[in-house]
Figure 1 (cartoon, one colour):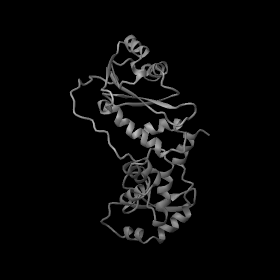
Figure 2 (cartoon, one colour; figure 1 turned 120 degrees about the vertical axis):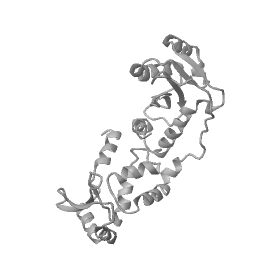
Figure 3 (cartoon, one colour; figure 1 turned 135 degrees about the vertical axis):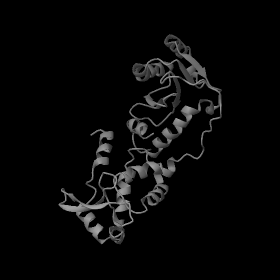
Figure 4 (spheres, helix red, strand yellow; figure 1 turned 180 degrees about the vertical axis):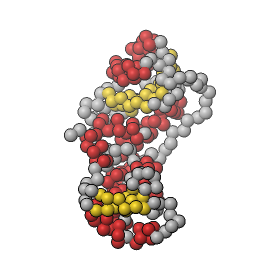
Amino acid sequence: MHFLESKLILLLNLQFLNFKEFARAQKDDSAIQKFLHNDASSLQLELKPCQSANCNLLCDTSTGVPRPFVPASFRKLIFDHLHNFGILSLSEIAASTKLISARYVWPGMKYQIKQWVRCCESCQRSKFQRHTKTPLGTFSLPDARFTHIHIDIVGPLPPSEGQIYLLTIIDRFFRWPEAIRIPDMRAKTICRAIFDTWISRFGCPSVVTSDQGSQLRSSMFVEFTRMLGTQKIKTTPYHPISNGIVECFHRHLKSAIKAHENEKWSELIPIILLGI
């Protein structure tokens, strides 16, 4: 089974829970019993049948989707299952909270999830400490999407399925990001990747902004942009904030890749982009 497919199945798989024990723990949990007799609570608690386990689960129906009320003994198990499989770059507290609270509910869950994320070793290793600061500047604003793009290269990364670098592209108007896996930084490889992945779907951009990497200043790349009728804008050398829109994208992209350092990063790129 493909790695990404197995991750998606894991997200939807509820077999990690023993629903009979879950229902029994609900009955024995003192916090749940207090909520059952609390008329001021915004939760709408109802017993819902769980056919697979032939039991009833106490669920909150206030959102329109039944969310099981999680007893204390099952909370960490549920957090670990949904957070640690790493499908949506969940090093961010808000992302983990949103994912879990859409499916389950318990008192004080936002604070508890925040504490668990902060104690997650993988998340802390991938946290960035320095932030790219983009200065104010005067730029002509694009009047349509996909007319002005920013490009850059990330790498070298640990080899994964023959790929070592990522060609990153982001649309200035629509903020649409792409991260294209490439085996090398040759101008020919970059031109082919841009044409096959971006131009074939979104058309030729009017403006391309990039740094002054040698492959992006090569005669082949200059001729490539000339044939497309694209204006090439070069940023100031050794000044990453001149291309701040793509550097900000890199910050989140690298953080997500680092959080999954034991996995094949080349297979994770599509789902990481979904999380970003």
